[in-house]
Picture 1: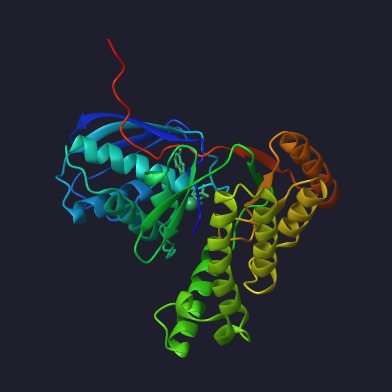
Picture 2: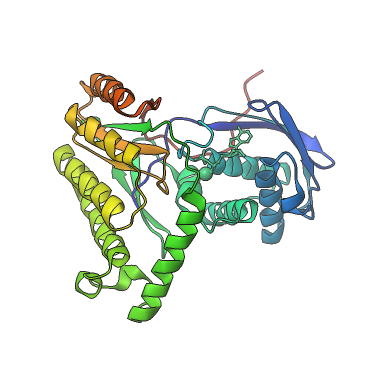
Length: 332
Ligand code: ADP
Ligand code: MG
């Protein structure tokens, strides 16, 4: 995969306490769970507290001492848009909990625990991209990540390429169940082909299976996209994004008419390319453009999109920034 950490963040401020108490300033609600991870995640209310409870439990399983904290959190990651506010929340809470216990796992362990917490909290067997990116992001770089080894190769994101995330104004209601379904189908196909995972199949082996075709060709496109980025070749990157979108739409079947219109209007307005991002079925598309006309392209495309669909899109221009970590205390 080839993600980067965007310039939005979830911030947690905490002091030691008996239990783990977290107030979300964004929602005006507080949750409280046992510091040793023994609170049953599924019973926690309000529901966002399940992410907190799940992180506490996963870190306890990793060996975190049962230190409590009294915490406030505030986030400027839009909730439920496909920009991973949930991973931002998990990672920020995990880092605060680790600091409270003066105990710190490795970056990979931290990300894996947060991924497991997301699955525990939601029941969706998601991958590690969001959490690993949130932990390991690097200023100015995209991250080429091999999910099998979790090896990360930074790829500079050139100043000559602007990246936009554009929310379609449609929430991703089916995304969780469809994701689990696609994942099961891919695992079944890999078993049928006798390979550990579909990435190990050749294009010829999957040429008559749309799911397999998507996965195998997408893995190739990710590597080619990293090369295009390294070569500062925005036009090539844009082409690859468009091929990826077509594959997600036609072979993997996770697009929607709105996402298709949004991609088409972005390209029509001058973007070099765009594709849906996240699990599909609503949420965001990601587009690349030349930096100078990027804002005008976004404005023209979203105006046309609004006209054609009646939906209200939102544009986020994103920079690659460093991942999450403790914030040094202010002087004085
Ligand atoms: P995404 O991760 O794309 O934003 P998700 O549906 O995975 O969408 O996660 C959104 C959920 O994460 C919210 O519904 C809420 O439960 C939780 N969440 C994220 N940020 C906050 C926050 N600042 N305060 C409370 N809950 C939050
Ligand atoms: Mg999420």
